[in-house]
Image 1 (cartoon, one colour):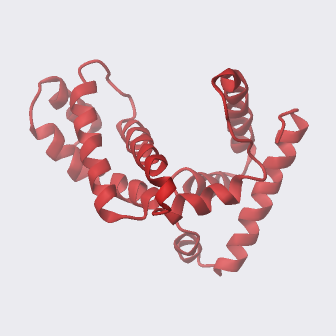
Image 2 (cartoon, one colour):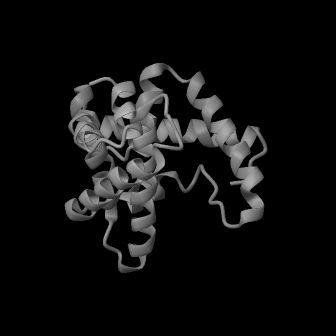
Length: 185
């Protein structure tokens, strides 16, 4: 079913909307949440919360890219769950991703820094768009979707160590770009 039809089902308040959304995007949302949380049960709860959010938000919104909109919702829900459980050290997946990026992306500590965070987002987007398409997709899949390095390496038919080197070079490139733009690290 096409995205516009699924969104129309939400607007018509048809329960088929959730079933169709799960059929088309359930695996994507479960993978995204699972990569962040490293717990299948918690990932499933985030996906269910995503469908609930879609049901409540869709009358207000008509997202053009349903996959991206759902991805943002499920990712934010998973990150919120991860943050609330972080003290218990239950989720190693996101810890690893954040530790890989900590040297090249500054952490946003206060609300006052939101303008700087917007500038950071602009610089990263510009940097990503300047990369070869495969490298940009790889970076996004690793650090936005949280895809496992081994899975990405297997998909690309290369050793994980070689892909880890590539990711390291991409992070160094991002760090250099951020420094050139005057963003404090």
